[in-house]
Image (cartoon, rainbow, N blue to C red; front, side, top):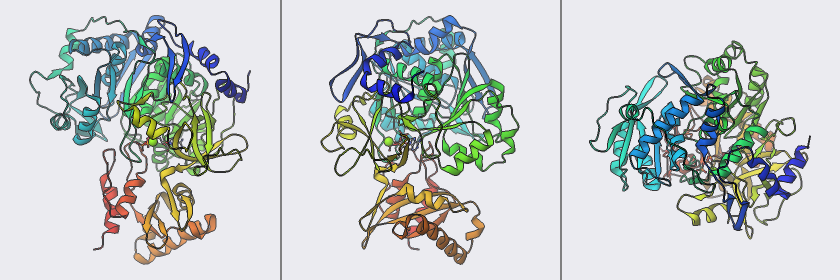
Length: 632
Ligand code: ATP
Ligand code: MG
């Protein structure tokens, strides 16, 4: 067995040989003539000359060998339904959907916008697009009309696939009104809207434009739509980043590179085997949903659970009940979900037989030590943090247990993943940092490995300017995250480069201050932002959610607690990092994927317009902060 260090080294030094081997994990209709064409940096063409199809690799090849194996397991605790599709059944549904899209005039290269709740038809639509060479552009279900309209204009879809409503915590969220309004607002008009009617919320049909999915499905019951073989570099989809730091960027993904990258990651990182069950608790509206609810597990021949509902409804045992029932071997979630569960009775975790589960992977935001320790202890399973971005589509940093078993370290998402030539760069000198423990920007030497973004949709210039031009004099991909590496090659993420505060000439990461404040026993969650200050340039402001709010229910008590928290920061980081104020709130503004919207908090604190808030989960959390800053 090769060591991981050798494996990684080879992926860089013998890039083509390495990826040629990985490419054997998927089916090709036409073999590729070149592994990586990097003649026009930073644009990389992976497996140039090859032809393949994502849907063939995810569905058809397994439907042929194991038609009766579970493929898609849909569980909704919102409408109390559970439906299991075998690979053969999934293939039939995808062909029906593909036939419907073709009948609506969708051609290879056309976009299909998917504005759907977590229902099987959303998966059918994505896979059907891949089948016929169309690009899907999934927009998180329930997004407001304005954000949806801007995505319609950007993607210019031929067809929009939607549903009458989603449901959240038992409450119906009607979609059709939002969709109609968005289409009205958008410059671009789709030729057709395909409506899945769940019977949750009555809606009006626009004659000639809106079509009923169930009716058309009947008409195409026996449809046979072969996979359209496309070039490896043919785009498979566009997807927006979460919008944590500003206007979302439309990530464009290829076909062959993505399929190979996912297949390899299922083997080397997630260690999932054909016939097993994978459970990712994400949403199809995010990159995790694309890579690890839909494509990754299916490409690996695994069943995938698509879950509509909250982690705590009907009770906090629901996820573990599913693990027991479907013998889930690999699970993927986000730290934010783990924190939600941490507030619940841990007895729910002990109620079910979790022996099938090998590991729980968490990604998307920093995994704080108390949460990691808690969930590792309760589950008694390895908790594996992994770090990546919408742009990359699969992990940049992780523990590759499929190559060589390695311990995890709390607070670290692990080492550079094979294929990524990760470097730490000193922001001012652009020199590479090699000493352990020294902080730098996490960057990747080009070309990015297969599966990463090809470009920004319809905007090559923005792609080059945004990602490849920020490190002075070097053509390197910047992640815009700070990190340090220890002597064993483990990275630690220190926050985003634009979340740095400059207090009287000292550069402080907001994340470091947050971590320090979090170690106070009464702090459940905290956000720190830098706010303009005439004297010091910037000062740190902290907003904390308390575990026991009664300890701050009088102004005196709040002041006392504030002082105690400041002392923690003084002791751990020094007085320079001490926030100017620590204010107590009942919730923090986050994106719908659970990421702190620090830039919005900062804008509000500086009495500026918070900008693009299309991805905010709960606007009242921001209002609370605004109120604290508005003199009454
Ligand atoms: P935008 O780019 O639009 O501002 P975003 O960066 O939040 O939004 P995503 O692609 O969903 O959009 O998130 C990727 C980012 O999430 C990373 O760049 C990093 O800041 C953070 N992140 C992801 N995984 C981890 C992790 N395991 N530990 C720490 N941070 C993480
Ligand atoms: Mg980002």
